[in-house]
Image (cartoon, rainbow, N blue to C red; front, top):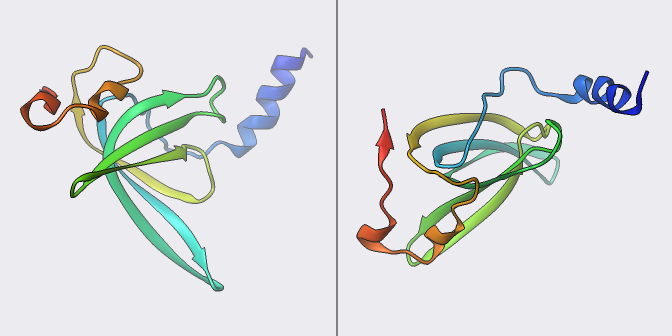
Length: 117
């Protein structure tokens, strides 16, 4: 058994079932479990996926950007983390890059993306 196949077999037990393939340009809503003072609650974060990263499936992360008022808020989520309850894909936009960080500098009509139906 080679090292890479051994690593894959160990990582497969930690992968979450039913997670769809998430790509750059998708509008998603991430439901994250937050633990505070011995209580649990679910926090939603809705935004545009501007970057995907990670070599193996277990290391896969997405950066989600949301515009709140005049400010942009970005969060990095590990897709197969046990704190992620679910990820809903709301819309898909046409993008040709793996990272669309240039959208941070755009405002108004320039920041529009074409929706794929």
